[in-house]
Amino acid sequence: MNIHDRLGKIRRKESRRVIGLISGTSADGVSAVAAEITGYGTDTGIEILAFETYPYSSDLRDEVFDLFTLEASTVDRICSMNFVLGEAFAEAALKLMEDHGLSPGEFDLVGSHGQTIYHMPRQEERHGYRSRSTLQIGEPSVIAERTGIPTVADFRKADIAAGGEGAPLTPYLDYILHRSPTESRILQNIGGIANLTYLPAGATIDDVVAFDTGPGNMIIDALVKLYTDGEKAFDRDGEIASKGKVDEGLLEELLVHPYYERRPPKTTGREEFGEQYASEVARMGEERGLGFEDIVATATALTAESILRAYERLLPAETIIDEVYLSGGGAENDFIVGYLSSRLDPIPVADNDLLGIPAAQKEAVLMAVLANEFAMGNPANIPRATGAERAVVLGALYPTL
Image (cartoon, rainbow, N blue to C red; front, side, top):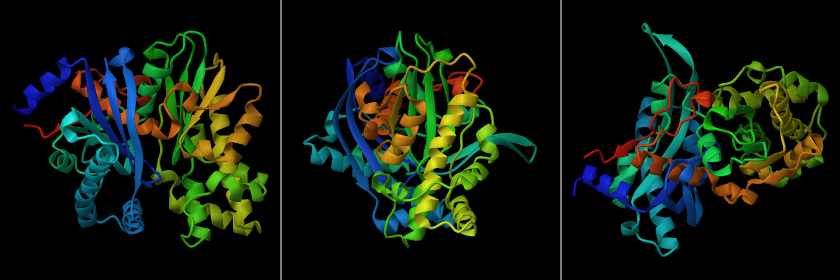
């Protein structure tokens, strides 16, 4: 059976078993979910069968981080690491199945996001052409070959081709699963980058507002790694920040960054808020006589304050917020959660788990859902969020024949 016949058979099934794979901006490792999916679009139903995150080895993670810098990300390293990460993603899929008593023959699709190493959402002109661009690596042909499962990947590119920024992708999942006829909700993800989805009560897909609010854990992680000489990779539960004091003057200076005032649609990444920016934050803090804990506390407050200012300044004027749900690593940072809860009171701030999808699993589930939407031929971008000219089917199929 060729791949096109197999895809047709997949479409005709009452339900599809899909593996979702992603490594996010924190580049901790590969998160893998196995899910049973019925329907598509707003009729989607999801049963999570298994979930694990398989950490990168320290050496592999260090090389992934090298690819985030223009100085170290040479063409030969990108070329090689594309296939190395393809093997790592395939291994994660196979390990997930092995660990949970599942087999490749049970699965119809893999949906893989890959590892973003560079994202250029603002339009640039080169050689007479104007374009945006993004680059995710983790060769999907390797995943398809190692697992024997048709693999859908490259989810951002069709949106960029249609004039969008290729991000955010999560609002589609938020809309089809978490819209409410009576409650106006913000779904706030705080990963390496923080992003929101606003779903007004009774929202149609054209009512969805979504964009990156700014840094999530990215600056915090980089500062912790810098000041501990790599012994720690993040501030567990916000313990370091809780021991420090926020420097209000430095915080206000950091909030002058032009990204925070830019109107949506907008996305950002390491290109603006990566390790180089974190080093600048450290320098500014040290010039003020701040210690490690105070600098981390201020950077953590920056994440929370930039989220709040996005709510106040960038959401539609008529916005009503009934509840806020948090996901991503920042949802486990007590300093961030406490800051947001205090400032938003009496609006409840809760964990995304309460909506039925565990916060830690959300992005991997999204990849499984996007693969399912591709199989069903259903557009899965939200043009209002990405800036695309039209709704398009996201992804490409491997193998192609």
